[in-house]
Image 1 (cartoon, rainbow, N blue to C red):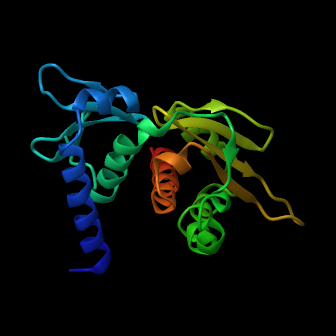
Image 2 (cartoon, rainbow, N blue to C red):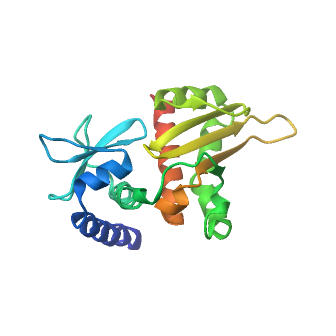
Length: 206
């Protein structure tokens, strides 16, 4: 079994165990989700989709197509549910480097996130703008393309792309509300950035 997969499974097992010991209504209230009265699952918005978190069966699916949520995203969702009671958005947006250990891990973070955005949208800013609109984002800032999206109900994220020219290469950045540092670990923040990049790439192809 690959090490990363093992890590995901162990982290997922621990997160489900902790969630099982929490009050579901309380988790829904703090996270911005809602408990479905018919299924008993917790419904939570995840970017432009919704997932159903069934704690007793330890299963998490997307409500639009019934597909299982990938294990590393399940871990992220559960960590958010468990940590969202620590506070909500402050409106102060920060870079990845400002989270504990962020400067040290920035090269790996950049490779998995910002470089992907630049590879796909660096020469196609309108493609990113269109993907952001499909994500339900709102325009902010003064970059070539910049918008704010809700990754989770209480976790806003901003995406910025500056188009390059013959002298200056294109650049990109992702900002997170500082509350992310209270709700999630720095590793989780990396997953947030990777997930929103993957979703934008997928929406940019559709």
